[in-house]
Length: 111
Ligand code: 5GP
Ligand code: ZN
Image (cartoon, rainbow, N blue to C red; front, side, top):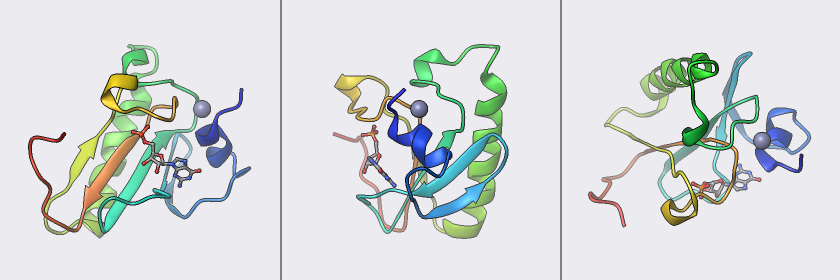
């Protein structure tokens, strides 16, 4: 499968890695929209949050556990976790990912 984020997780495409374990990898977004803009993804290919089920939800628990650790280190004044799901929501890479945004005031509601 021709998936950019699968290639990043296999190190076939270079990225600035922030954190990695057996199930997940977190790296800097190529086009940051905030001073801190990381993406955390499962190493296995899951297309989006709409494909989460009881068989693969272990990876989701791990992702959120890791987000807490990453935020403790990098996000000292609050942060936002976003997962765009589907084209209307702005998902452009069809491998589930969670944006971690911090380092500035973030508007609400999002556009
Ligand atoms: P989405 O639009 O699907 O919610 O988010 C995809 C994100 O992936 C975008 O913020 C985009 O900048 C980022 N991105 C796309 N291709 C690459 C890449 O090759 N490397 C990195 N580090 N980020 C990427
Ligand atoms: Zn993938």
